[in-house]
Amino acid sequence: MKLRIATDSLARLKQGRTIALTGAGISADSGMPTFRGNNGLWKKYRPEELATPSAFSQNPQLVWEWYSWRLEKLISVVPNEAHFALAQLEKMEILELIISQNVDDLHERAGTSKILKLHGSIIHTKCIECNKKEQIAKPPRAIPYCECGGMLRPDVVWFGESLSPKIQDEAFQEAATCDNMLIIGTSGIVYPAAFLPNIAKKEGAMIIEFNVAPTAITPLADYFIAAPAAESLPKFLANFQS
Ligand code: BJW
Ligand code: ZN
Image (tube, rainbow, N blue to C red):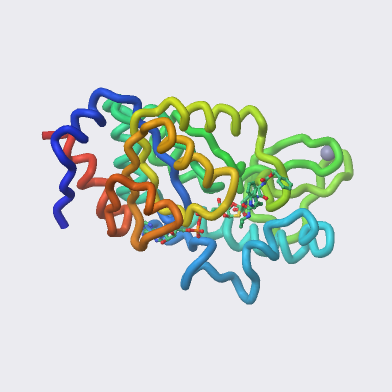
């Protein structure tokens, strides 16, 4: 695959403010399952049935089982070439910021430092009583509890819950003011994250989408790069290294 980006678009990427929006697809090449699609299933549940406050209040054991299973997986995998390419683009001052919907820590492990995590972090817990946040040492085998006696939950954003207003405002602001947005491995159907490409496009940004299949965002894209992110991102990076 040859990644053809027009000369004027390359100049725009070198001179303008570029940000990236990432989703589960960027971690797929590391072996992390996505939410939707063929490899996106966990037992017989859909994310909409487990990633909700009501699922947790009705069956915290089941929800924790799902998160422990994902934590086990996360511990066993490493960042892939797509995560490393984005970290390198940040070092080269081509990429200003990653806005990620992912709750894994693969961007950070690859060396990215400027990241807004819209949906929280799976490696942290939050007490449902005192709100204290803590890093998880190892995947819990039973429902974990806080020293205050309150039940702990994963520090993530479930359906029907608000994102951190500070993080959401910053993400919207960045989308409205960027010149270029790289969109990698997201289905673009979960809001408010799915507003970001629309905001960027409306304000005149160039959109470059990297995905194995077209998405809800593809009609907005100036470029659609149809390949696994771990293949396309290093090729995209190579444009700035020669
Ligand atoms: C590859 C690849 C490879 C594969 N290379 N690519 C309009 C406005 C506002 C809200 C709403 C609205 N309409 C509906 C809502 C409500 C709801 C929502 O969006 N629902 C939709 C399903 C319709 N949103 C919310 O509830 C949000 N809260 C909110 O809006 O608060 C205000 C409010 C409160 C009360 C009432 C109303 C409003 C919160 C959303 C939180 C989402 N949380 C999750 C779980 C996080 C915790 C966890 O991980 O367990 O976040 S759901 C899940 O989806 C997760 C992801 O971050 C998110 C996005 O998924 P993503 O990353 O796009 O993954 P996939 O699997 O969908 O796609 C993978 C892609 O990769 C595919 O395209 C593949 O092709 C591709 N791919 N391999 C490149 N190798
Ligand atoms: Zn507590």
